[in-house]
Length: 243
Image (tube, rainbow, N blue to C red; front, top):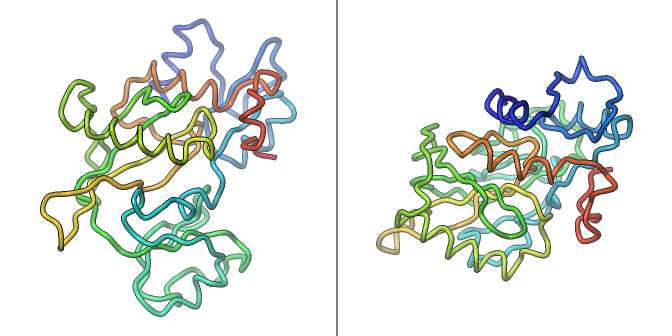
């Protein structure tokens, strides 16, 4: 957040914390949590773009490398085998592998959307900020599930593999994503295949995603599109506006 604030200030933008915000004389943009963002969106006139809750579950197995399904907390409480469970957009409970449904918090709303997926191993995971279907910025953020940020070498072999995978992904499922979004991908280990294969980890809101070691200037370009003035929203992005 501090890196993006410095970049925004360098562009002549006024940066303020949510609790300090007053009606702005000019266009307003947002980078922060969904609760405060939703509260301020109408007052300040910005629109929040976010992928659909079921986007990941609708992808072909070619891109997920595992079974993923959209469900509710009520469904998750009923699982009887180890399953990766996560909220699709917020952080209402920790995304993790749960041995069974009884390990999930008991005080959740039964109707809360969740994503349920097979348990897999990602050797490395990368955060990609996409703008109009192209990778604007990227960073590795984890190795075997442990936080390990490192800049993505845009001219290296890993970046080339990721770009090829993202091109295929965007061609197949790009219209189901907003024009400014975060997609996490990873090197999925498969016991029955040598080496690794690329798979989508998840999609996230650019305005609520850690940049890790990605270029702050390029990240900010994506954030400004993902959470900028409502009147500037592209017609194709209107279905992705958070209401």
